[in-house]
Image 1 (cartoon, rainbow, N blue to C red):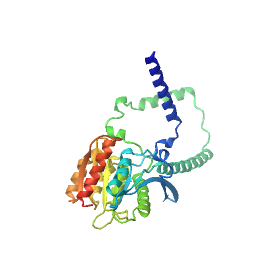
Image 2: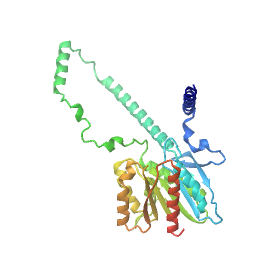
Image 3: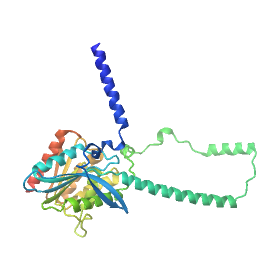
Image 4: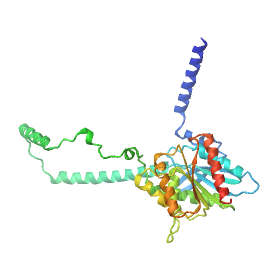
Length: 335
């Protein structure tokens, strides 16, 4: 009897949890939904003549003397899911004397922009096709009716001329990774422009205090930051803000050609760089890990370090390892 009651209780709890998850709004996974509104601040970005709101969290230093500010930007996702591992890192660094800003950008704006462009292009194409069809209808006379015997002979001739393609040969020559590549609703340049406006606004409002300025970037946000911060002898970085160091984690872009160029972009960043990886990194980031080290070694980057974080994503232990690696690297730099 007691076993049946326990099973019934577990089943009712499971049903209630599933119902509550289905009734929650789409933004329920965002940290703006769980945290008090007084703790969440908002940036109003001006992108393509539109105002894009971006939520962020700010954690002040817990030491008498502040060392500077660390801006933590997670991998931009369309759903706005908060990355718990980096959230705990941003919340732990103030204990070591750092002001932190935690930004969890959403790419929903970029997807909406692309949908608007697609809709306008489709409407223009539809108008052009309708105009062309009206012209053809006016100029073309009604064809003579064909007999059933003539139509049957023509259809049989057409079928005999078409070569048959084996079903198993349709996907021959395609690599599996290309089939698994996600189809983004925006381009790399659009994402880079969005991250640039975001960092410039964060710099204007939260990075003007004395001390060192450090960017901690993850995923596709890290990939865009490498392009923004790279420089050569003849050309400076696109991102014109004061940055003293860069920390990247799981850096990637889900396109083979662009992803392979990230190693060269990293070698051209004239800043101290801490490159972190873990078991939770995706295939794209793992594919370029060794090449990032090689390109940085060839470019003679003086303050470049690669480290592996123990644990898996969403675990508190990994967040602690992450924080200790960042703090230890800053101490190595003398900060």
